Amino acid sequence: MRREKDIHGVVSRVTNETTLQGLPAQVNARCRVLVLGSMPGMASLQAARYYAHPRNRFWPLMGALCGFDPQQGYAQRVACLQAAGVGLWDVIGRCRRRGSLDAAIVRGSEFANPLPELVGGLPHLRVIACNGAAAARAFERHVRPALPAGHGLTLLALPSTSPANAAWSFERLLGEWGRLSPWLPAAEQSVP
Image (cartoon, rainbow, N blue to C red; front, side):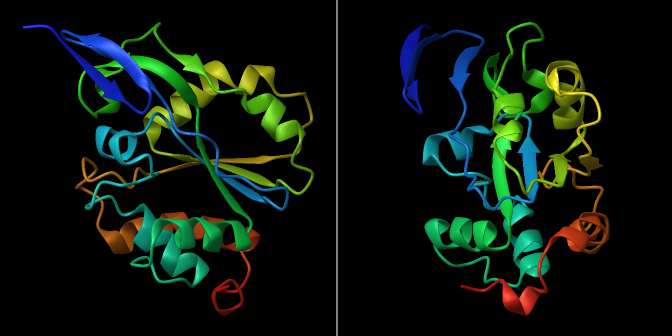
């Protein structure tokens, strides 16, 4: 059965795969840490909010690292991240995928976001952190070759906060994501 479906402004025929358009960057000029996902899941695209799946551990992790309440409204959470010098975006801006899993992204259908241009316009940027192995692989394929030699950025591949990464407990994720701490203000200073 074929039907049309609207996902974050992209109408496409739904058969086995859907062409998806990602979310806009949530970055300001004070960004020191850029967290990149691969492509938002369906819950995030439908809500037009990063990490909207209720079991995704991204917001609790960043709340713990940056000192804000992860239960507050989305706009407040984004504002807290930005106050802490953290920006959000994805490596892939558009692709075909069936469902929410990164493994369902159709290889060759990916169109990368213009990350080299964004990075070039962020004078305070010090670290790019990929949220999960799929984001790290997409970054290596689509973005890293376009970055200028000697860019001086630290690149971190961190474990996915997705509920699909159930093998990682919150505490274990917090330990790995704590590698961002040198670039984050003390937690008590980042609450707006």
